[in-house]
View 1 (cartoon, rainbow, N blue to C red):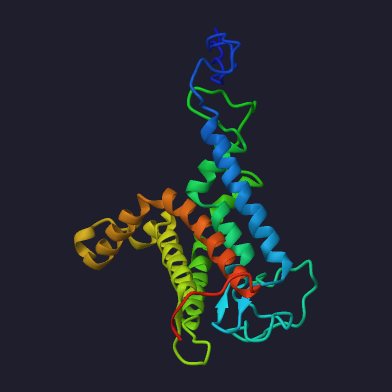
View 2: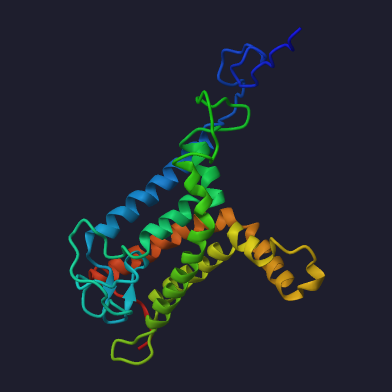
Length: 272
């Protein structure tokens, strides 16, 4: 006698309660996914437009460079904005001037553990909320294209570290006065705060936590790495907040530099 077939365990399987309603929840469970979608869409639209317009991204008087164009290594970059020199010739308009790092930063954010949860639930609806059935009939996890690319997150992390160093260099170069030498203005505060928060977001990454102490079996034998692991773990508890905060500070930094570069406002100067 053959063993009875195991019943399916899906939400709509015969073994589950036959409830026609999508959910019995009466609260506004759809609000968090909606707000997440709107927040991500706002950043994507703003960053895409600003990355391609090629205007008001450099303030030559104070050496302010927006992070969306850093590093600017093309002959198409306005004079002075290429802190690291020009490595390539002029680029067509369909290639953003920040092409060197933008794909890697996009990959770092897309494969981030928090962002996966955010857009899986809000955009892919897998699931949109607790006790709310997802509309998909099957799920293969991160074992096939395109989701198998999520496993490359650790490699994007290494590139993000290099980009953070470049952003730090840009922030240092921005302490430039209108008449040369040292200068300090409101723009320096905006740029520096953004860089600090970007470092915090990058170092709070789950991959960074694994790199610092994930493979250790005996913390007592590696006191320095254990200390680093505890610091990263503390940051890691704020990874979600930093993920959203840095999206905001990136837009604020770019928007402020755009206003100053276009002559819409003047930078508030404290020194030179």
